[in-house]
Image 1 (cartoon, rainbow, N blue to C red):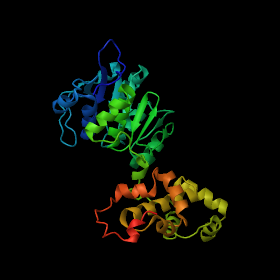
Image 2: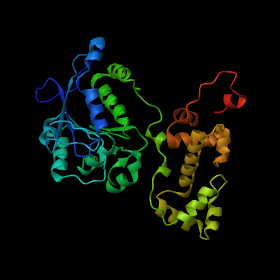
Image 3: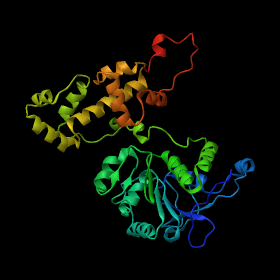
Image 4: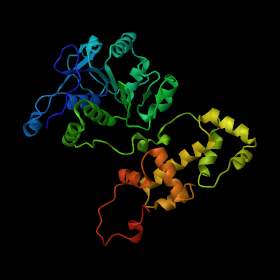
Length: 351
């Protein structure tokens, strides 16, 4: 197992230097993911693969010499923050409090590293740090979907794409939820060392080289405990009637206002059109039924108000990035049964 090419280096160095930034609330698991994929190779594995030496040098750095992370992990003595200024790649693992402010010194150092030509990478909530440093302005990016609203509010110049596991925009790379750090890391290995090497490394880690469906399949907006918007009573009524055929005229009549007024008020309160919101809610309802019941997709389509399986499939794939049947397999794996145990309903459940 040897790479077909090597990653770019600078300053006459033999290895591609990754400055792995550690802050007081770094997520230890994501630090470990970066170290495992880019750092020293495990002797038990290299004895089999022959891949003895990583072409990367991973240097943990920070504003302070040492941090004990919220998880209790002590990463030892850190190199100075200035390490980012001469690194080939600057990598920011996820953070426990994405909304927490960061020091001007830290943000300026990241901005200077970017200006100097470093590849900038963030995992999960680390995108908030890159955003505050101005690195993401007028670029595409992603972060953990739970913080999409806060991210859009704080960084209006960034084109957020929370449905993706990771996003490339030139030399800037961002990933979504915690475990998508592995997806992005393997993608970077692919870019640097070739697809075959990245695939082999993924096999060693027992990680898929590419996961279908993206981050969208995990998004469930009802998890959030946001304050109710001004039209919350109407939204509750809509949820109670989401399975019914709904028209804009009927909805406006229910609210005793013109269609135009309803459209304007609804968008001001939710940031979405009426029917985009309804489709999202129907998909959310379908997700729950796919996770918790044995109903066929055709039955779920009627139960959530889509009417036909084709309408459900089209909207589900657009919103979630995978098929309804694929989503069910991810979140409700089939129990092991003998052929005699299966009923015709089981056999056609996903039709």
